[in-house]
Image (cartoon, rainbow, N blue to C red):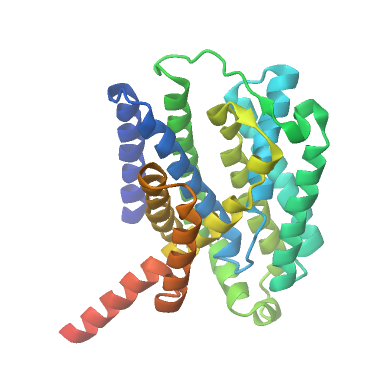
Length: 319
Protein backbone atom coordinates (compact mmCIF):
# COMPACT_ATOMS: atom_id res chain seq x y z
CA UNK A 1 0.00 0.00 0.00
CA UNK A 2 1.29 3.49 -0.88
CA UNK A 3 1.87 6.25 1.64
CA UNK A 4 -1.25 8.06 0.40
CA UNK A 5 -3.28 4.87 0.81
CA UNK A 6 -2.08 4.40 4.39
CA UNK A 7 -2.90 8.04 5.17
CA UNK A 8 -6.38 7.69 3.65
CA UNK A 9 -7.34 4.53 5.54
CA UNK A 10 -5.87 5.90 8.77
CA UNK A 11 -7.99 9.01 8.33
CA UNK A 12 -11.07 6.88 7.59
CA UNK A 13 -10.49 4.81 10.73
CA UNK A 14 -10.06 7.95 12.85
CA UNK A 15 -13.23 9.43 11.35
CA UNK A 16 -15.30 6.31 12.11
CA UNK A 17 -13.83 6.10 15.61
CA UNK A 18 -14.77 9.75 16.23
CA UNK A 19 -18.31 9.17 14.93
CA UNK A 20 -18.71 6.09 17.14
CA UNK A 21 -17.35 7.95 20.18
CA UNK A 22 -19.83 10.76 19.50
CA UNK A 23 -22.74 8.27 19.61
CA UNK A 24 -21.57 7.08 23.01
CA UNK A 25 -20.77 10.45 24.61
CA UNK A 26 -23.28 12.98 23.23
CA UNK A 27 -26.73 12.87 24.81
CA UNK A 28 -28.45 15.59 22.74
CA UNK A 29 -30.13 14.02 19.71
CA UNK A 30 -30.11 17.08 17.42
CA UNK A 31 -26.43 16.76 16.36
CA UNK A 32 -27.24 13.26 15.09
CA UNK A 33 -30.29 14.40 13.14
CA UNK A 34 -28.35 17.27 11.53
CA UNK A 35 -25.16 15.23 11.11
CA UNK A 36 -27.05 12.45 9.37
CA UNK A 37 -28.31 14.86 6.71
CA UNK A 38 -24.80 16.29 6.13
CA UNK A 39 -23.26 12.81 5.84
CA UNK A 40 -26.08 11.79 3.51
CA UNK A 41 -25.27 14.65 1.15
CA UNK A 42 -21.53 13.91 1.35
CA UNK A 43 -22.17 10.35 0.17
CA UNK A 44 -24.61 11.50 -2.54
CA UNK A 45 -22.20 14.16 -3.84
CA UNK A 46 -19.32 11.67 -3.99
CA UNK A 47 -21.52 9.12 -5.78
CA UNK A 48 -22.75 11.76 -8.24
CA UNK A 49 -19.21 12.84 -9.11
CA UNK A 50 -18.30 9.34 -10.37
CA UNK A 51 -20.52 9.91 -13.40
CA UNK A 52 -21.05 13.67 -13.37
CA UNK A 53 -17.49 14.66 -12.47
CA UNK A 54 -15.13 12.00 -13.80
CA UNK A 55 -17.12 11.22 -16.96
CA UNK A 56 -18.65 14.69 -17.42
CA UNK A 57 -22.23 13.39 -17.81
CA UNK A 58 -24.42 15.75 -15.76
CA UNK A 59 -27.00 13.61 -13.99
CA UNK A 60 -30.19 15.27 -12.72
CA UNK A 61 -31.58 11.90 -11.65
CA UNK A 62 -30.09 11.78 -8.15
CA UNK A 63 -33.55 12.11 -6.62
CA UNK A 64 -34.75 9.13 -8.68
CA UNK A 65 -32.04 6.84 -7.30
CA UNK A 66 -32.41 8.24 -3.79
CA UNK A 67 -36.19 7.81 -3.86
CA UNK A 68 -35.93 4.24 -5.14
CA UNK A 69 -33.59 3.49 -2.23
CA UNK A 70 -36.18 4.90 0.18
CA UNK A 71 -39.05 2.90 -1.28
CA UNK A 72 -37.00 -0.28 -1.57
CA UNK A 73 -36.67 -0.10 2.22
CA UNK A 74 -40.36 0.66 2.65
CA UNK A 75 -41.32 -2.38 0.57
CA UNK A 76 -38.87 -4.71 2.35
CA UNK A 77 -40.03 -3.58 5.80
CA UNK A 78 -43.72 -3.95 4.88
CA UNK A 79 -43.34 -7.29 3.13
CA UNK A 80 -40.65 -9.06 5.15
CA UNK A 81 -39.66 -6.89 8.11
CA UNK A 82 -36.14 -6.86 6.65
CA UNK A 83 -33.30 -5.50 8.81
CA UNK A 84 -31.39 -2.36 7.82
CA UNK A 85 -28.33 -4.12 6.26
CA UNK A 86 -30.66 -6.06 3.94
CA UNK A 87 -32.45 -2.84 3.01
CA UNK A 88 -29.17 -1.13 2.11
CA UNK A 89 -27.78 -4.07 0.13
CA UNK A 90 -31.06 -4.52 -1.75
CA UNK A 91 -31.22 -0.80 -2.48
CA UNK A 92 -27.66 -0.92 -3.85
CA UNK A 93 -28.52 -3.89 -6.08
CA UNK A 94 -31.63 -2.15 -7.45
CA UNK A 95 -29.63 1.04 -7.98
CA UNK A 96 -26.98 -0.87 -9.93
CA UNK A 97 -29.67 -2.38 -12.17
CA UNK A 98 -31.27 1.03 -12.64
CA UNK A 99 -27.90 2.53 -13.52
CA UNK A 100 -27.24 -0.22 -16.03
CA UNK A 101 -30.68 0.22 -17.65
CA UNK A 102 -30.32 4.01 -17.70
CA UNK A 103 -26.88 3.65 -19.22
CA UNK A 104 -28.03 1.36 -22.00
CA UNK A 105 -30.93 3.64 -22.85
CA UNK A 106 -29.32 7.06 -22.57
CA UNK A 107 -25.53 7.02 -22.55
CA UNK A 108 -25.35 7.22 -26.33
CA UNK A 109 -26.92 10.62 -25.78
CA UNK A 110 -24.62 13.48 -24.82
CA UNK A 111 -24.83 16.84 -23.13
CA UNK A 112 -28.25 18.30 -22.41
CA UNK A 113 -30.08 15.32 -23.95
CA UNK A 114 -28.67 12.94 -21.34
CA UNK A 115 -29.54 15.38 -18.51
CA UNK A 116 -33.14 15.71 -19.74
CA UNK A 117 -33.44 11.93 -19.89
CA UNK A 118 -32.42 11.63 -16.23
CA UNK A 119 -35.08 14.18 -15.23
CA UNK A 120 -37.66 12.14 -17.15
CA UNK A 121 -36.56 9.05 -15.22
CA UNK A 122 -37.36 10.80 -11.94
CA UNK A 123 -40.83 11.81 -13.12
CA UNK A 124 -41.65 8.30 -14.38
CA UNK A 125 -40.58 6.55 -11.17
CA UNK A 126 -42.24 9.11 -8.90
CA UNK A 127 -45.52 8.73 -10.82
CA UNK A 128 -45.30 4.95 -10.49
CA UNK A 129 -44.73 5.12 -6.73
CA UNK A 130 -47.51 7.69 -6.32
CA UNK A 131 -49.98 5.15 -7.75
CA UNK A 132 -48.64 2.13 -5.81
CA UNK A 133 -50.92 1.81 -2.78
CA UNK A 134 -48.95 -0.99 -1.14
CA UNK A 135 -46.19 1.48 -0.25
CA UNK A 136 -48.59 4.27 0.69
CA UNK A 137 -49.22 5.92 -2.66
CA UNK A 138 -49.57 9.69 -2.77
CA UNK A 139 -50.59 9.89 0.90
CA UNK A 140 -47.30 8.45 2.13
CA UNK A 141 -46.69 5.77 4.74
CA UNK A 142 -45.55 5.62 8.36
CA UNK A 143 -42.57 3.41 9.20
CA UNK A 144 -42.12 1.77 12.59
CA UNK A 145 -38.53 1.53 13.73
CA UNK A 146 -37.41 -1.77 15.27
CA UNK A 147 -35.76 -1.89 18.67
CA UNK A 148 -32.24 -0.49 18.66
CA UNK A 149 -29.39 -2.88 19.42
CA UNK A 150 -26.25 -2.35 21.50
CA UNK A 151 -23.92 -0.48 21.59
CA UNK A 152 -26.32 2.29 20.49
CA UNK A 153 -28.92 3.82 22.82
CA UNK A 154 -30.97 5.43 20.08
CA UNK A 155 -31.89 4.41 16.53
CA UNK A 156 -30.88 7.80 15.09
CA UNK A 157 -27.41 7.36 16.59
CA UNK A 158 -27.14 4.01 14.83
CA UNK A 159 -28.31 5.52 11.52
CA UNK A 160 -25.75 8.30 11.95
CA UNK A 161 -22.97 5.71 12.28
CA UNK A 162 -24.33 3.66 9.35
CA UNK A 163 -24.35 6.75 7.15
CA UNK A 164 -20.74 7.43 8.18
CA UNK A 165 -19.86 3.90 7.00
CA UNK A 166 -21.58 4.61 3.66
CA UNK A 167 -19.57 7.84 3.33
CA UNK A 168 -16.29 5.95 3.83
CA UNK A 169 -17.39 3.30 1.32
CA UNK A 170 -18.40 5.90 -1.29
CA UNK A 171 -15.18 7.90 -0.85
CA UNK A 172 -13.02 4.76 -1.00
CA UNK A 173 -14.67 3.66 -4.25
CA UNK A 174 -14.42 7.16 -5.76
CA UNK A 175 -10.77 7.43 -4.77
CA UNK A 176 -9.97 4.03 -6.24
CA UNK A 177 -11.71 4.91 -9.51
CA UNK A 178 -9.83 8.20 -9.83
CA UNK A 179 -6.43 6.55 -9.27
CA UNK A 180 -7.08 3.54 -11.52
CA UNK A 181 -7.26 3.02 -15.28
CA UNK A 182 -11.03 3.52 -14.97
CA UNK A 183 -10.56 7.10 -13.83
CA UNK A 184 -8.03 7.83 -16.55
CA UNK A 185 -10.41 6.42 -19.14
CA UNK A 186 -13.33 8.47 -17.80
CA UNK A 187 -11.21 11.61 -17.82
CA UNK A 188 -10.21 10.95 -21.43
CA UNK A 189 -13.83 10.61 -22.57
CA UNK A 190 -14.82 13.69 -20.55
CA UNK A 191 -12.15 15.77 -22.32
CA UNK A 192 -12.92 14.45 -25.81
CA UNK A 193 -15.12 11.38 -26.13
CA UNK A 194 -14.59 10.89 -29.86
CA UNK A 195 -10.81 11.15 -29.56
CA UNK A 196 -10.84 8.74 -26.59
CA UNK A 197 -12.85 6.20 -28.55
CA UNK A 198 -10.54 6.50 -31.54
CA UNK A 199 -7.52 5.75 -29.34
CA UNK A 200 -9.07 2.54 -28.03
CA UNK A 201 -10.72 3.68 -24.79
CA UNK A 202 -13.84 1.52 -24.20
CA UNK A 203 -16.02 4.59 -23.67
CA UNK A 204 -19.44 2.92 -23.57
CA UNK A 205 -18.25 0.24 -21.16
CA UNK A 206 -16.69 2.83 -18.87
CA UNK A 207 -19.82 5.01 -18.91
CA UNK A 208 -21.97 1.99 -18.07
CA UNK A 209 -19.66 1.07 -15.21
CA UNK A 210 -19.72 4.63 -13.85
CA UNK A 211 -23.52 4.72 -14.10
CA UNK A 212 -23.88 1.37 -12.31
CA UNK A 213 -21.53 2.30 -9.44
CA UNK A 214 -23.00 5.79 -9.04
CA UNK A 215 -26.57 4.45 -9.07
CA UNK A 216 -25.81 1.69 -6.57
CA UNK A 217 -24.26 4.14 -4.10
CA UNK A 218 -27.10 6.67 -4.43
CA UNK A 219 -29.76 4.03 -3.76
CA UNK A 220 -27.77 2.63 -0.83
CA UNK A 221 -27.56 6.14 0.67
CA UNK A 222 -31.32 6.60 0.30
CA UNK A 223 -32.23 3.27 1.93
CA UNK A 224 -31.80 4.35 5.61
CA UNK A 225 -33.80 7.54 5.04
CA UNK A 226 -37.15 5.79 5.55
CA UNK A 227 -36.09 4.73 9.05
CA UNK A 228 -34.52 8.13 9.73
CA UNK A 229 -37.76 10.01 9.01
CA UNK A 230 -40.13 7.16 10.06
CA UNK A 231 -42.20 8.28 7.10
CA UNK A 232 -42.01 8.20 3.30
CA UNK A 233 -44.00 9.95 0.62
CA UNK A 234 -43.26 10.42 -3.12
CA UNK A 235 -42.96 14.22 -2.93
CA UNK A 236 -40.29 13.99 -0.23
CA UNK A 237 -38.40 10.94 -1.46
CA UNK A 238 -38.16 12.18 -5.07
CA UNK A 239 -37.67 15.84 -4.20
CA UNK A 240 -35.68 17.62 -6.91
CA UNK A 241 -33.71 19.30 -4.11
CA UNK A 242 -31.60 16.14 -3.83
CA UNK A 243 -30.56 16.44 -7.47
CA UNK A 244 -29.89 20.19 -7.37
CA UNK A 245 -28.09 20.19 -4.00
CA UNK A 246 -25.91 17.21 -4.92
CA UNK A 247 -24.90 18.80 -8.21
CA UNK A 248 -24.19 22.15 -6.53
CA UNK A 249 -22.11 20.57 -3.75
CA UNK A 250 -19.99 18.68 -6.26
CA UNK A 251 -19.42 21.75 -8.45
CA UNK A 252 -18.65 24.00 -5.48
CA UNK A 253 -16.15 21.54 -4.05
CA UNK A 254 -14.68 20.59 -7.42
CA UNK A 255 -15.23 17.49 -9.53
CA UNK A 256 -11.66 16.89 -10.68
CA UNK A 257 -10.61 15.25 -7.40
CA UNK A 258 -12.40 12.79 -5.11
CA UNK A 259 -12.12 15.18 -2.16
CA UNK A 260 -13.97 18.01 -3.93
CA UNK A 261 -17.54 16.74 -3.39
CA UNK A 262 -16.71 16.09 0.28
CA UNK A 263 -15.59 19.69 0.80
CA UNK A 264 -18.59 21.10 -1.08
CA UNK A 265 -21.12 18.89 0.73
CA UNK A 266 -19.72 19.69 4.18
CA UNK A 267 -19.63 23.43 3.44
CA UNK A 268 -23.07 23.68 1.88
CA UNK A 269 -24.72 21.02 4.07
CA UNK A 270 -23.50 22.63 7.29
CA UNK A 271 -24.57 26.07 6.07
CA UNK A 272 -28.05 24.77 5.24
CA UNK A 273 -28.45 23.12 8.64
CA UNK A 274 -27.38 26.31 10.45
CA UNK A 275 -29.79 28.41 8.36
CA UNK A 276 -32.63 25.96 9.05
CA UNK A 277 -32.13 26.39 12.80
CA UNK A 278 -31.43 30.14 12.87
CA UNK A 279 -33.57 31.58 10.06
CA UNK A 280 -35.69 29.27 7.91
CA UNK A 281 -35.33 26.21 5.72
CA UNK A 282 -36.76 28.26 2.83
CA UNK A 283 -33.56 30.35 2.77
CA UNK A 284 -31.57 27.24 1.82
CA UNK A 285 -32.62 27.43 -1.84
CA UNK A 286 -31.54 31.08 -2.05
CA UNK A 287 -28.15 30.34 -0.45
CA UNK A 288 -27.70 27.33 -2.73
CA UNK A 289 -28.32 29.44 -5.84
CA UNK A 290 -26.10 32.33 -4.74
CA UNK A 291 -23.17 30.08 -3.81
CA UNK A 292 -23.46 28.10 -7.05
CA UNK A 293 -23.43 31.28 -9.16
CA UNK A 294 -20.46 32.71 -7.22
CA UNK A 295 -18.38 29.58 -7.63
CA UNK A 296 -19.30 29.00 -11.28
CA UNK A 297 -18.25 32.57 -12.10
CA UNK A 298 -15.33 33.02 -9.70
CA UNK A 299 -14.00 29.46 -9.32
CA UNK A 300 -15.35 27.19 -12.06
CA UNK A 301 -13.07 24.35 -10.93
CA UNK A 302 -14.43 24.53 -7.38
CA UNK A 303 -12.68 24.95 -4.06
CA UNK A 304 -10.13 22.21 -4.79
CA UNK A 305 -9.30 23.78 -8.16
CA UNK A 306 -8.96 27.20 -6.52
CA UNK A 307 -6.57 25.81 -3.89
CA UNK A 308 -4.46 24.15 -6.60
CA UNK A 309 -4.34 27.39 -8.57
CA UNK A 310 -3.24 29.41 -5.51
CA UNK A 311 -0.56 26.81 -4.72
CA UNK A 312 0.70 26.99 -8.30
CA UNK A 313 0.96 30.79 -8.10
CA UNK A 314 2.75 30.50 -4.76
CA UNK A 315 5.36 28.15 -6.24
CA UNK A 316 5.84 30.48 -9.21
CA UNK A 317 6.34 33.39 -6.79
CA UNK A 318 8.98 31.46 -4.84
CA UNK A 319 10.80 30.59 -8.05
